[in-house]
Length: 56
Image (cartoon, rainbow, N blue to C red; front, side, top):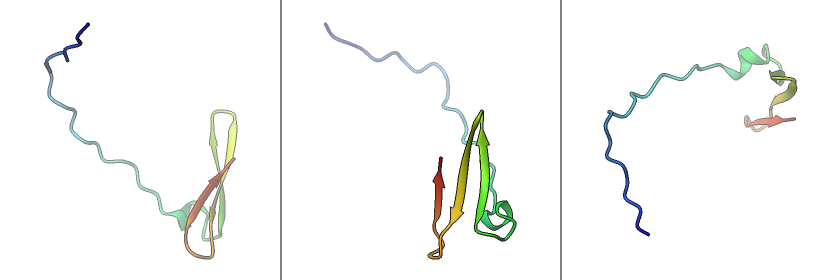
């Protein structure tokens, strides 16, 4: 059985601008913030090395 791709009938969507947030703004110039998604809460942490870690 051979599979043939369907011809493209529409143009690809234009890239959309993603929302941008400052980590210090999210943490209110601290090093941690809580982020919720549905009924889950995650912790965003800025490390001493300036990296971001998101944990459940």
